[in-house]
Length: 449
Image 1 (tube, rainbow, N blue to C red):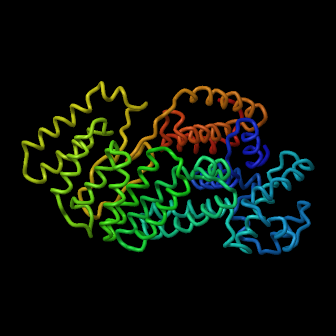
Image 2: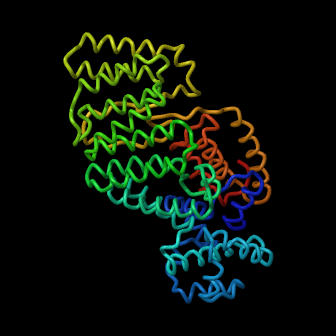
């Protein structure tokens, strides 16, 4: 079997699906940490992974490159990497030259790993795909440990790299960025995660709220042509953050301007109303103002998510000690959620909006990705089957050429990529991740079973 990078290159060439080498290496390393048999096989095959480079000195890394036919000193490496936006693009032609001389050798991966190790040491502040990917994944590790401050700090650093890479590559949309820089976690998903964790960290350390304002404003400016749910999420986050830091007039002006332009934005009215509920630490608690905004919203013909507006009014009335009104608003909520209304919703019946209102000022929020929280993108299931059929055909070729069930791993990532783009009714959650992990654990087994 050849290198993991070769598998990535083959898949990209045949199906147009991009998986970066840093992602493949990370997946393999993480799966090996959970599977002793895979770890032993990697050791037997002497397959290089990134931690191996960390144990070598700069001189030893250069010697390793020379042993593979890459006669490079520091100056030559610097010249080779000048202007590059990923180590992979630097290493790819060198990999090709090695593979011509040594077909199917896993040792070719040393070239990329050595170059990446040297880049990390010599130019740690120079942005590239691989170092951005590390920063994003470091943030997710902090998130798993509930270290919100460290997560937010890591992701602000990552955001600076995103902007630098976007400027260098000239990308003007999230899709373009993800196509140009196939990270372990797509920018499409990560933006929502970062916005949310900046809020959560900001509840403890207020400077992250100021950073969140800059983050949302720049994302709105840079990615102005994105889906409606994305723009609405970022607008809401921007205005509520102004409110939370005490700039209530700025928040009111933003909500007012957006709702004047789009009065049917139901969740915009709810977000504005929430500012005057007992949900913010610095804001004036004004339930009458909150209710007035919701009633204005409900009275607008064609307002989107009318059921959510009614549901929030039921909550306000209940909190105000008006149970009869609360019951009536609850009845209207259910009326708007009848089966005929549900049938008209996008595939999966997922509503757009937050799953539940905030009930305390210090609520820790979950991610606001499409389909998991505030808003859901409209799904397009028509391309799902044909895309998967294309992968199935290619997966058989992978089996026949010795790549067997690693194709399953790549297939899982194909499905994830489609789901993230809103092109099929597939939620890229734990089940998909389990399938992906199983594919890597079966990497070295033979047969199609």
